[in-house]
Image (tube, rainbow, N blue to C red; front, side, top):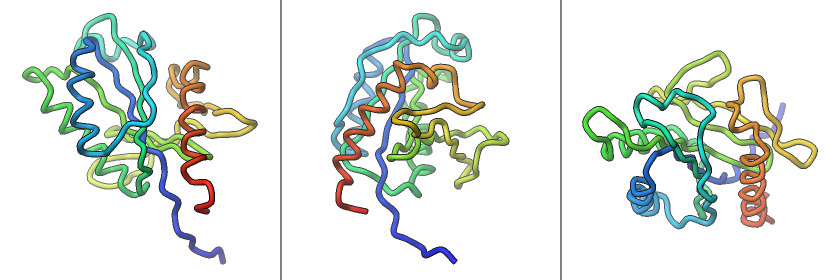
Length: 176
């Protein structure tokens, strides 16, 4: 029988997809107030991997990632996703969202994203929220899985997640 161990807190990350920089700047104070200081912010990248958001957001979409300084309890992922969904709704114009906010958890071994959509590779968390193992860390890099989104497979994104992983490694040094 394995022994139950205390969890290590994990790194909270957010991915954003949006058209106008002003909406991204508008969402940051809400994120900071609710989750704390940002310790990593990626540069703005073009997002053209899917037309899923085209009807809602329009063209010339942008992508950006941040991470939060204070690690979180991984059991809280479903609460975080519920909060970001409400935030998206609050910042919407009518029924049209202006930003997509994807929370995730990163630790030394993996990147997990939250989703409201069920699928064979997603695990029920609570209140209609699912978790998806999106990337795993092996051979000094993040590796994709069959279901990993095409953008998360890119070197550009994996480089970002390696940087965030380095920050996290320093934060949890000596905690295990």
